[in-house]
Length: 264
Ligand SMILES: Nc1ncnc2c1ncn2[C@@H]1O[C@H](COP(=O)(O)OP(=O)(O)O)[C@@H](O)[C@H]1O
Ligand SMILES: [Mg+2]
Image 1: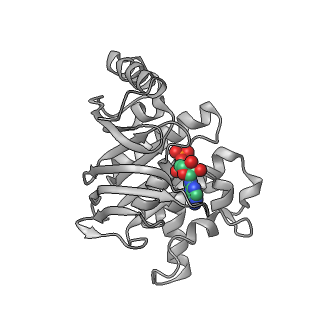
Image 2: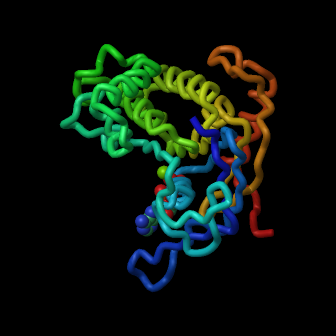
């Protein structure tokens, strides 16, 4: 697999007119450089513009101003090598396809030699997420956490150079979320794609990331970026007990719940 790619946002702004004469500004001015193979998380309160930001980064939505570049090339539509993982797995999986056929969807049209080869390739990803035994079930026969694992297997089968994650762990229960965190970290450590996650969950941000960018409330801008500096591999029990984890958690919760004056 190719290495992860870089992503650069330079002075990105976005306003929605919403059919009214006055414009609503969602993103005030976002500049951010994500390094190749980095795990960067953007945290911000609900409604601050995280999904808007991520969709612009993915070329799924046009910015009002500024520029987005992937590996130095301008993004003006969904680029190759980029995969987007949505919050709502129920909406992203195809209910009329079995689990394995959902994963195969990621590689169709990529000219793999035979159907059998394609299936074997995709089965490896189902094995990675622990769902090989469920290959022939339908998504609706699985729990929410399992469906999200299918979505993750499909995302990785596409062999992304950069994976964009829009709160993909927020609609599952806390224990499943921890398992998904472990899994995504293991897969990322293995394959070293670039990962850009947006979330409102501070613990999740600290647990997963190399670096955290803090978004202000709307119109949002990046208030600061922080290196987590936590050792890897991370562990769901011991990592959250580290003094550095607690310090970051404290600091981020304070910063998100007590917005600073960003006027300057
Ligand atoms: N397509 C759209 N048209 C108009 N307003 C939108 C659209 N998408 C998002 N918004 C508004 O932009 C703001 C940011 O939304 P969003 O990016 O979904 O926030 P978040 O993901 O942080 O919860 C919200 O006030 C939302 O109502
Ligand atoms: Mg959102």
